[in-house]
Length: 262
Length: 213
Image 1 (cartoon, rainbow over the protein chains, first blue to last red):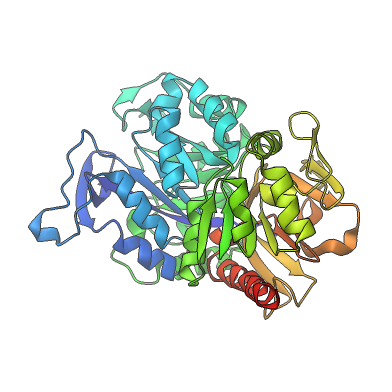
Image 2: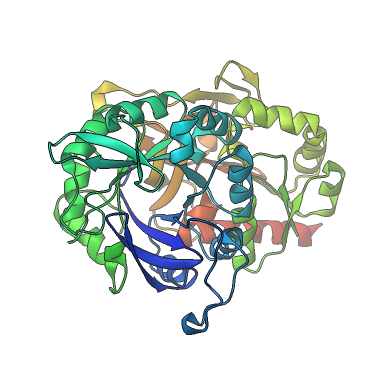
């Protein structure tokens, strides 16, 4: 039986790993390569790496981090893929087919696109035609407004689009997306659990796999995302500063009666 | 030394990285005439069937591959699309003739209401029942979990070539083994230890074969 997947998300900002809250607060937590080695050692199901840098500044040569310097994020992909014997999704700052191509050549298996996909949906279809649908993940950032309505945002949560998440996800699939990475801006870093209503609506509107992300604060939260219709559950913060976060997450899913790869 | 065929269909890097991890020399080969220098040949690939065949043809790989694999009998390993290309025909976006090394057809995974929700692509880790214990799966238990990502499946005409079976709505060939031809629908290079062990098993066939020449 196809297992439900449990996926760590690493956020890269200016060459350093960060944790995120509400898409606004970013705290540096470490070395972009070291964490991947740990995840590979744990044999996690797969890995999502999102480069949320704005501008071109890279901070890795700072003395206080004692991290080997990288010229740019492409070098990080090459380095990561050497020890990454699991599927690697790379996202962030991808604007063109050529941006996708160089990242796939460096060792990424899937490319996650977000703002540019919404501005130019043909980027999804061109990417799918060139690299296959399985290589194109469309990342959808959603905000739930105080009145309960949900809306898709782009540009790292800064720009409202007027689109409903379920409509945009459906459109992305029609354009050839192979997977949806669903994020909730208002749950990001809160630990309050998934926005299950959002996950349910988007899952019902699509027939491709949906990866639920944002809000996991306890391992028990993962199962809620699967029950709401997601094929995979992802999180960022809960994977850091904790030992055995893969094993504990899988065990919690298993206890909830969900088939996972142990 | 292993050749990983570079025909413009997807990520060779991870296949090369996986061979590097087991200390097996492997190189990307983009010139068909270079294949004769290698002891074993890997045909990786993601993307559409029609494009895959077109690229093999336009780059002059088809005859050279047949020379090395079918005539000389060098161990061959097809991965994902590289397995499907062995078929006679595929119905992915039209109808395309394949290499026809293992007669059979490639068709889309049909979502069936009967089993409830079935999303396509079939993406993620799934169990494979291992039938042939002495080839790719030497030393494995009777069941192992591998990483899949595909929307089409290969059905060989001769069911006895199937060495591993996966189930997603229907049972399909997760791997085939016949003579010096080996192929997997899943991605061993993305399947952690199980996948790396499988590549090691295949590499040993290559070593054994090159020594016997």
